[in-house]
Image 1 (cartoon, rainbow, N blue to C red):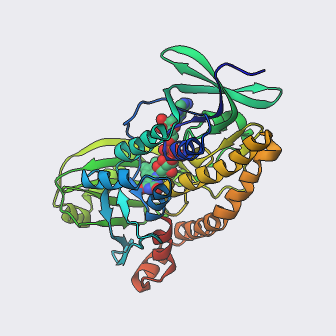
Image 2: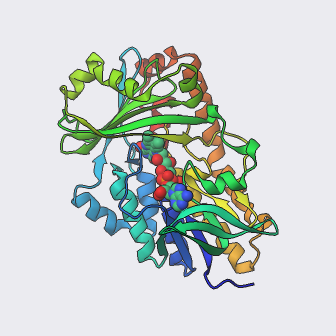
Length: 392
Ligand SMILES: Cc1cc2nc3c(=O)[nH]c(=O)nc-3n(C[C@H](O)[C@H](O)[C@H](O)COP(=O)(O)OP(=O)(O)OC[C@H]3O[C@@H](n4cnc5c(N)ncnc54)[C@H](O)[C@@H]3O)c2cc1C
């Protein structure tokens, strides 16, 4: 039966993953409906570091002018180098690598970055609706749409393919994945983020502080320009629970460290302090495709376990998903059998990197002194610096 409000693709969530998928499919002429529980611009708790590889992916879909204009307006702040500081205070500085086509990396507050992408999706022809998804609609075991709250009333949106891009708390993933495939605490992290003003600027450099209490996590200071920065810290969830930590207290303890106090010149007030979770891509044997539906980005769980970076993989997974969706729509077969090519593509593109990052993460947790050794004796080519450079 054809429903009156059926779309080729309904995408739940207009973060980087959902908007990327919407941009690509809408540019190819498909009928795409993009849903988000918020209107844009809206904040998303993040370190805001957007690597050059993501910028180039957006260039490929015609977003170069929009990005250049955001840089000109001062919304995206260019970063050229990275500083890693070890538990005992050794440090290593390295240049960030430009993209293959010359793109730079940026600290781009998500208030601006996500609004740019969501607008690009609409400009590409996707329809946008502010709606809070509640549950996928199933017919004979197949996903055929999503039920959502719109302005206080329940509406049903039907799809040939439903894309779950609703982030780490995804209702689509929760409903479609079996319980044993939900992320375990050792493949998750918890993090706190704030903005800080009136600080000493280290122009165009992102800073990572790796110290004993939070390893294999870290604290960061990412400049946003004008003597302000995104500042925060994150750690593995099992570690956090085991030691009964309090993130706000930990952030204060970080700010009170003599070296950090000196670094920030006793700098300004924190604002927009908030916590959020991360799902790593290191958990094996979980599905990303279902009968009539796919998961992309954080809803699938593609964050790198050592850097905490997820924007690159969100846009990558969206791109891979659109390849499979396009074939499925062309053949008229949107069954799990047709869509599961997506699992294979994700595995090929990301799994080796996730596995090696997970190994490094475990090593840092068990042997924190390893970080001192790597940073003290490491050069630009050392594996730790390279991991951060490549995966940020
Ligand atoms: C503290 C912190 C720091 C981080 N720092 C970095 C960093 O510096 N660089 C980096 O690359 N990555 C970083 N990450 C990871 C990065 O934020 C994520 O990987 C990225 O946002 C994933 O994009 P996404 O589109 O999959 O999900 P999200 O960005 O979470 O977007 C999901 C969207 O879905 C919407 N949504 C959710 N539920 C519903 C619903 N029920 N109905 C409708 N809409 C819904 C949300 O409103 C949101 O717009 C960080 C994460 C955290 C928590």
